[in-house]
Length: 112
Length: 115
Image (tube, rainbow over all chains, first blue to last red; front, side):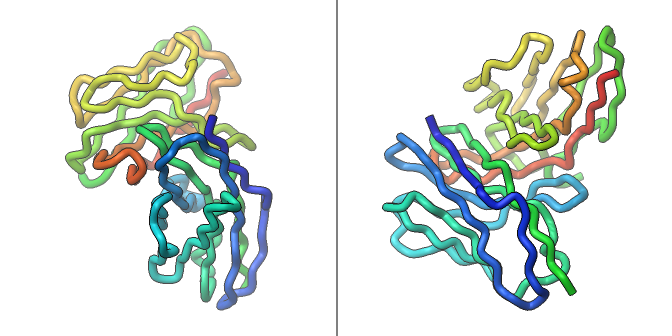
């Protein structure tokens, strides 16, 4: 069975600094996708970034980058130049087939 | 309307009531999903509909009954719920190209409280 582990319940970062949110996964799917979603206090989940299991390069989307280490089964999210609006819950997710499962999430607090 | 719309946003019901949650997507996607988000628990996948056919039922109790009349609409019918069913219910849709590139677009959620 697939499993996503996020070991940081909460993280603090100073505005304008970079922060890394950890994610490890376990899967038996030969081909899969790894995702990060953001959930602000309003509740709506927002897609941030995607990494395919066969992609050779790490994914980047603006200030977001995904540090993918397949052998270690990790898919950490790096947010550069943190902004106050980045304060939210962040979820790592795995997709295989039509099924997407999520980790428990990390709450990020950005300090002014 | 754009994206994924969920109604109602808030619902309070008694354990003997029957109510429904509605989800509508305006993105032309071919798959729709129900997730349950409880406090201090990861999002739980409940149901998946792909081209209106249910492809996943994640051991959900029968007091939750999904309905997908077309590829744009998804309902979750609720009856004789328990207080532990109180949660945020999130609807999502996606355009399935390949199995691993399944980006979900979520609605704002329906906050359910069972008294």
